[in-house]
Image (cartoon, rainbow, N blue to C red; front, side, top):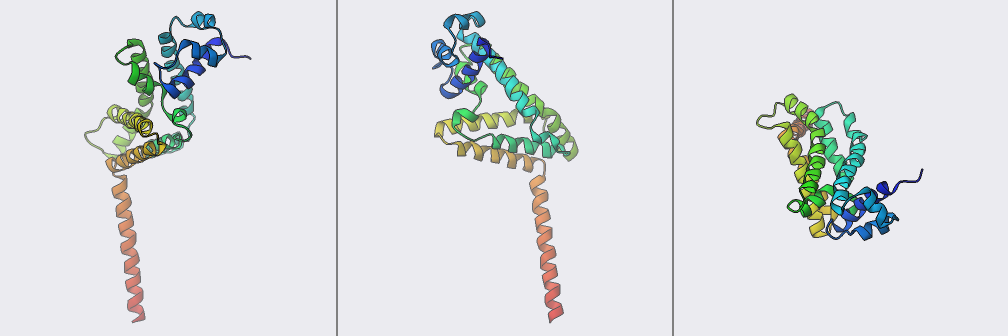
Length: 222
C-alpha cells in the first residue's frame, strides 16, 4: 500500500532535521522531499511546529520498536543487560553523523526556549526511552548492592552521556569521539557496579596461580 502524505512528511522530517536542524528545514523543502503538495502538508499539520511535535512522537515509535527487539534483553543478569544496551548504542554509531544522531536531541537544543510543544515532545521521547532502562538498572542496583544510586537518575545519566556524545561528534565532525564517550560510559558502569574490580582481582588471582605453578615446576627441576 502506498504511504499516505502524512507518513511521507514524517519520514522526510526525520531525515531533514537530523541532517540540517529544525530551523533550516522549511515546509517547502519537506514537501519536495516527501513528494507531496503544500496543500497536503497543511491538511495534516497546521504548522511546521506541529509537524515537529508529531515527528518526535514518530521517532519514539520507530526507535522504540528497534530497541524493544534488540538482543541486549536476552541476558539473564541485569547488569549484563545494561552493559549490552550500551554496547548496542555504540554499534549504532556508524555511517554519516546524521544517520546515527538523535532527532529529538537535535530539536531540543534548537527549540527548547522557542517552542514549549517541541520541548515537551523531545522530553517525552528522551525521558520515555530512559524509563525503559530503569527496570534493568534497578535490578542491577539491588543485586550488586550499590548504594546512593537510584535507577531513574542513572538511566537519565546514560542518555545525557549519549546525547552529549552526539553533540561532540557534530562539533568535531567525527563519529569516533562519540564512540569513545560511549566506551567511557560502559567503563563507568562497570566501576560503579564493581565489575572492573572483580575482573582485576580475577586476573590478579590467575597471575598468582600461574607464578605459583611456575615456581613449583622450578623447584621440582632443582
